Length: 132
Image 1: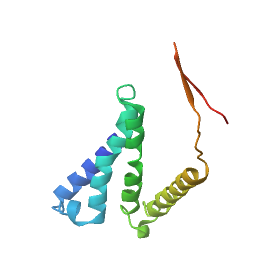
Image 2 (image 1 turned 90 degrees about the vertical axis):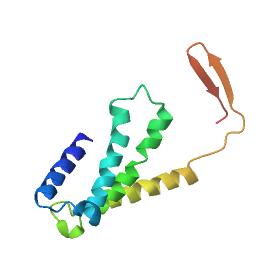
Image 3 (image 1 turned 120 degrees about the vertical axis):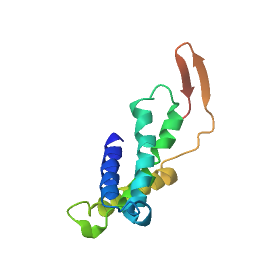
């Protein structure tokens, strides 16, 4: 996340010195850069700094913001920018598609309903018993 902020800071300094700051809100690169800058800490910081302070479910849901990050990065650099980042739409776009297809497959074909589940409270945790 710090790398993203540093990268953004130098772009902003360059655009300010060239009097091109309008590129921040008038171009796909500027807008997607802002989106990426906002989302990256929400994905990274809970696992880096607040692992014990934030519930697992919240951290997992925040990690789904990686989709927003990846889609924004797909539009951050045009494909004509190869080799200087033009590969991003293909690499991250392909990764998002594969991950989404895998998640879709798992949710459709790799889940099952368990009718009788028993929970037993133990001194060190909870034991779950179910027919398999």
